[in-house]
Image (cartoon, rainbow, N blue to C red; front, top):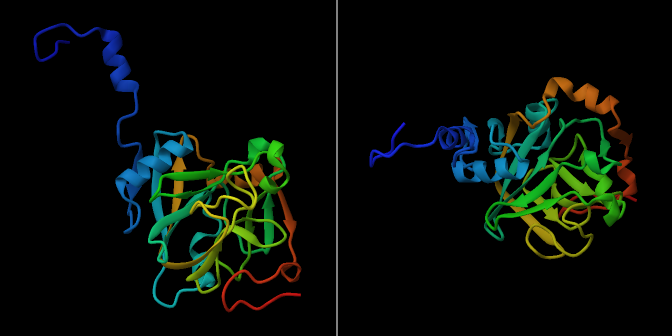
Length: 246
């Protein structure tokens, strides 16, 4: 093979070019309105894969609640949630490596190998990965699967969600507890706490060579991922208008 100047190109360089992932790392399938190609590429890079497909599962409509969210995304395997936060006008979200559920349980990840979830701010290109065991016990709280709420990342028993979405899918909060290597210092906005108001919301299924397949979820759960009951009356309200639990 020759280049435009007629000079021969070594076969080894041709193979490198063919095998190296191109600029478009993420493929969008029915991409909604929030996930641009550049955002998809950035998330794919965070996932460590050049072969990722994002398939729209849920787009928040007028009047939608947590019921609509769970009806669309439960049992669908790994997902990316995107939230347009209207106070800061920034696009934030989180990656859940296993299926959302409606059984009012925590997904606990006691080992570092299981702590593959992350929250992020696409507007500022910030990613906060789950805290490792060397950074305390907070990182084990990956997500909460509450049938009455939208996606809940982190939080712990106090309900200090790293990203939380209220039942109306509009109110929410961002503390710092289980993600980013700290607890109480640096959330996805670079602050300690933020009361969120969400506009657009979209959830995508994530599939690819390095993403767990939904069909293997039972094996993942049986292989050490802990799912334990979490009684709602043990934490206090963290959203405007939410009932206060004793």
